[in-house]
Image 1 (spheres, rainbow, N blue to C red):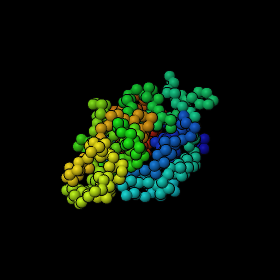
Image 2 (cartoon, helix red, strand yellow; image 1 turned 90 degrees about the vertical axis):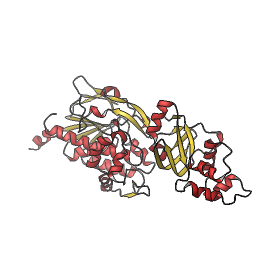
Image 3 (cartoon, helix red, strand yellow; image 1 turned 45 degrees about the vertical axis):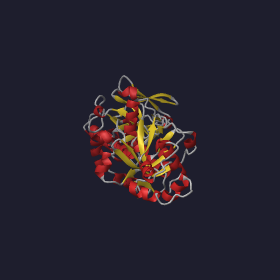
Image 4 (tube, rainbow, N blue to C red; image 1 turned 30 degrees about the vertical axis):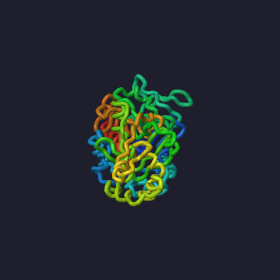
Length: 407
């Protein structure tokens, strides 16, 4: 009897040991599949650990429709998967691994440990307990003529002939962590990779470059008809940070089309121009403009110098004009950081190349999950949430496929 049960067990190869691959592996192992994870790096979860350096923003607590809308052009495609595996379930999954979560003041959801390593250790222990095999230093080489998966391993080329396959190789950002997009040539229907959630170049003066690493907190950033609140960070090359990343897709597209894009900073979005004017009109006396701005509005040196970069060294003396300058400080972006420094990437397997269960239409029995697919979202928990949600959908697809005896 034991032999007959074992022979009926379906085998699944998961190619890629990031969060999408590991979560698909977990779902499949729980369902009784024999799962092997193939990972080309010496260890799994490297980009997951890198995300943990910023606190491991797992997901976001905002209302579902607003949440789904963060996926832009892919929102309609992503919505049913997000509904099937919503933010609350991701938080509950983390807590099931002994990592309680909390909601920050911005609505973002983090593990209380504020890092990824404890969660990853517990996760790998769970996978080992489920019998998931992990083969590292095994780079996928595509398919053999008979459809077998080919891998380059330290012991030479290996092949696998599973009943089903989940591809979860990531996009093309931070290639040194494992996701270099080299797989694109073996899939076929792939949109070109482009950086997402990246910094942008600004021709700062030497003085402004001296403020590199300093934040612009509580600002509003506007491009076209879109405005976001948050924080930006001055870098020697230009600007980065959450508010910048939230606009990265339209900014990238504008720079690709026109060669540059101009964003507008509101350094005091909680105050009207009239309120600013009233504050600025309260007796500057003999003090310098910098001191006046610091005392009247608590503008930091980096904020004051941003105003000078935007409007010229000699800022308006009249309170009303100065207030308007603070409410709308234009900064011209001349380029963007590339894939090697981007947090995530746009492009990948075109959404039309997979069915509703994320199976490649051109390769029955092969499913795709995570950042390999052509969707993008801003930082704030949206990247990991969709990564897990697509992994859950791909695992469901594998189970449905193998249950029909199509392997």
